[in-house]
Each structure stands twice: as structure tokens, then as C-alpha cells.
Image (cartoon, rainbow, N blue to C red):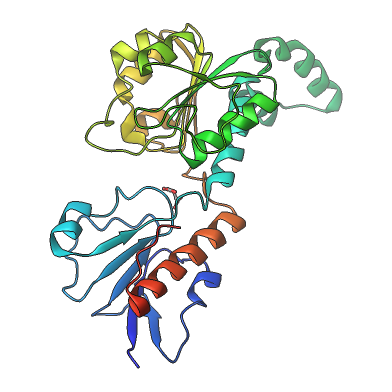
Amino acid sequence: MAEFKIRTYNNIAIAGLERFPRDRYEVASEIQHPDAIILRSHNLHDEPLPETVKAIGRAGAGVNNIPVAECSRRGIVVFNTPGANANAVKELVIAAMLLAARNICQGWDYVRHLEGDDHQIHKQVEAGKKRFAGFELAGKMLGVVGLGAIGVRVANKALALGMNVSGYDPYVTVERAWQLSSSVIQASSLDELLGICDFVTLHMPLTDQTRGCIDQGRLASMKDGAVLLNFSRGGLVDEAAVLAALDAGKLHAYVTDFPTNALKRHPKAICLPHLGASTREAEENCAVMVADQLRDFLENGNIRHS
Ligand code: MLT
């Protein structure tokens, strides 16, 4: 019976690792000649891939931390786990829209810095609250760019909150998007979508085609006071242009899971530490899916993507 060695990175959930029976698999972070690698966000671009590797499993959706072209050249199969963390990301995107619309982070920060006794705090709250007045999601137009597992879930949940939703995906029509409500309006281009939306949320992969696609020109075409949400990859936006749009009041807020030095303290940017997929449930779903994929591949030669 063949035995397999799997190198792991990033504390892949134990529930996934348990799929590899100990009598056939050696699974550890320090393995020298692995048959396969499992990773989460660890960047494989800057290190040599061991000659022995036959497959790489990404416990997540994006594969931009994997040298995919080199893998194709060498016949290494790359797996990801589409949909396994989609609910977690969807819930955070909905929360992020509320954070931005209701100025929750700014209001919370204001309260944390109040001083005095309760009577004085109450007086400061009443005096200060006006500047944190926000707006409601109901009736606003949300633009969802990318109609994969996450984008579709965000769109459907936004409809349930009374928002109007427009969707755009260069590869999928709204009619064909998986389980998408028929109330979602299809935009014929990214530019058309940007021009009509109060909120725009990005759910496409980072590729040579999408890098920097939200640039100065596209930001200028957005509605004044719009909110931009990026829970996909930081490189999708031209950061200098986003900062300029925030400073000019063109954007009400930029909410991102990919902080940088320039963004992290900007008063209109809400930066989270790549938390989109960080729930117990999503981590377990991804780990189990990727473990099953690798096991089926190593033992039976099957290549499946779910
Ligand atoms: C993804 O691509 O699905 C996420 O980046 C996953 C993660 O946070 O590890």
C-alpha cells in the first residue's frame, strides 16, 4: 500500500488533517519531500517547490499565493475549495456595509475616547452623535462584481435587506449565475455598474486582467458618496486612486480585508486583518474539502474541485 507525505502550512483545521489516516499518511509542516502541500495564505511564490510534489491544495478560494503557471508546466495539480468559505465572507460583507453606512467604527472610536463620569459621558454622546449619522441599506443599489459562490450569496442576502442589486461578471450572465435571485439586474459592463451603485463589492480573483481594475477613471465614474468594499484581494484596486477618492469625498468609505500602511489609519477606510474566511465553520469546511480532494487524487488519481 502506498504511503504519502503531506506538508502543511497555516494551521489547517484539524478536522481536515484527520482525513489522512496515520498508517498511510505523514502530515506535518517540516516534511522534506512531500507528495502534496496544503496551505492557506502562505506564499509559495518565493520558495522552490520540492521535486516530489504532485498536488497543492489551497484551503480557500484564491490561488494567487501559488505559482500556478509553474505548476501547470510541471504537471502539479492545484486544488482550491470554491464555496467552502462563501457563507463566512458573505456575512462579513453584509456587516461591512452596515459598518460603513452607520459610521459604526468612527462612533465606537469616539465613545472609547470619552472621559469623565457617566453624566459627562452622556452629555458628550448627545453633543457628538450628530456627526456619526448614517444612512440605511434598504432602497440603496448594491453592485456585485463577480458572480461566483460569494458574490451570489451577497447579492441574495442584500435583496433580503431591501436593497436593489446589480450584478456583473465577464464570464457568467446573471441568468446563469448559480442560485441567483431573478431580482438581480445584470449590468452590461463594469463601468455601467459603477455608475449606478451606492455600494460596490468586489468578488473576483486577482489575475493579470483584474489587477488594478478599480483605477482612477473607474472611481471617478462611481456615484458621489459611494462605498467600495474589497474582500477579494487588495491588488484589485489602485490604492493611490482610492486614497485620493476618499480624501476628495468621492467615496464615503473603503472597507477592505487587505490593510496597508497608507490605508490603515485613514479616517474613511475600515481595514480588517483578512478576516473574511476566518470563522470556525469556514476553516473546517475548507480543510475537509481540501483533504478529501487530495486524498482522492493521491489514492485514486481523481481530480475534483468540490
Ligand atoms: C480565500 O481566498 O478564500 C481566502 O483568502 C481564504 C483565507 O482567508 O485563507
